[in-house]
Image 1 (cartoon, each protein chain N blue to C red):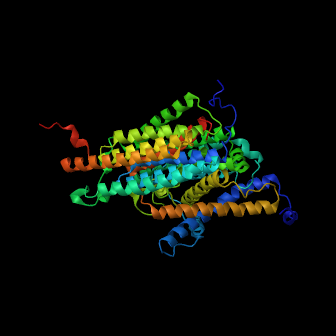
Image 2: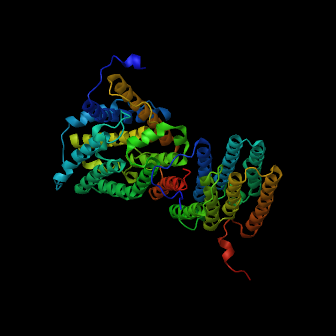
Image 3: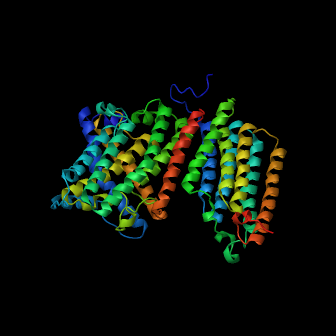
Length: 238
Length: 326
């Protein structure tokens, strides 16, 4: 039981590579927390783009540290898809869903949280802690594995679930789903950086399918309910 | 370097210790002046002189002191008590030297935090003594939000304790200086960011409160000394400027940039450290002025969101350490 929990002395720094990988993954988690409080659809999409950009930065860091030239290509591809294409496609699909057919930028998702922002954040901290310590309890260790980054990726996925649960608008739920994928990408980068490029690319294009499907769902919902809110769905219709 | 400074005489350690306190006391109004000036320039105004806070203090010290009817001795003692606290804290933190001075071990970071909150408690009690609604409102709000920012400070202290194995500010500064790995570790960055957010809240800067203004409804820290006048008001103003510089010093010399501190007691090195400290504080002040100009004040009930954000950063810092990767 010589687990890292035994904190007799100072915790040694993990080194510059693991340290910066951990910082980037923590920033990804912070972006996820930012989505919990975002009040404008436009900013929500921007935050998603920023989060995806951080994943690409992490890919570059890992590529440089472990000499995996494949990962540079993956970083570029992932940036092109998730930082540029997905936000553009999302904005296209959401065009006209604002109040009175205004551009989607004006769409109001401000009051869609079920809880107040501060309580949501505190609840999400608890959920993130669960993710963190459950990975810690697994006792995974490896010479090249930044355990903290892996634990953070689990937290990102769990907080994305919180986002999908507490927000009552389809747009936030869709973005929660996409950022869940970001969490999984983070885990994949940390655990299996040497995965063949073709597989990684296939996963990325899966995301594009999800974006289109979600976009259609959002449009259909908006067409029926004339709102992005899912609160309408609870009432029965004859 | 050593050749150039070899001629300067070594100062006695008590003199260095006295210089720590007097640098903070004398420099604090100037830092406030720099921030006010910078803020005005960014808004396209000419702004007050950098030395304006000193003139204000000099004017207030010459004025007559009045107390509201029914206020007891507590009302008059509080500014002195607060000032005493603010003069004590610089003894505990690395202001000028990278080596601990004899009185530096009187208290750890937590001790410094206690003394700072004792000062704020004294001011709050005096505000309650006045019977003035605005002063009481300010005191009650300051205490309410303090109850949320203090856990953040505690978690920052935990982070420091886990990183260094002690909670002495000198030890953390030395650890940060020791290697690049110490700087990029997420725990360090998260704790520093959380501390910065707490500093914004504690010094009454923009996401929480407008620092200069007459809008009583939004006031928190600024409303408390409303009923004080003359030298007592001057002490409170000076004290809050000192609190600001003390917090900036902790942020700069313990977390962000513990470089440029004197390693010896030589007069040249200590003089350079004074200049470096004031420059670092001005740097933080410029950042604060930019934040002041780029964000809107949060509604009172949204301030909990801001403090919840700071709490998130501090808690994540401790988490990352527990998996050994922070």
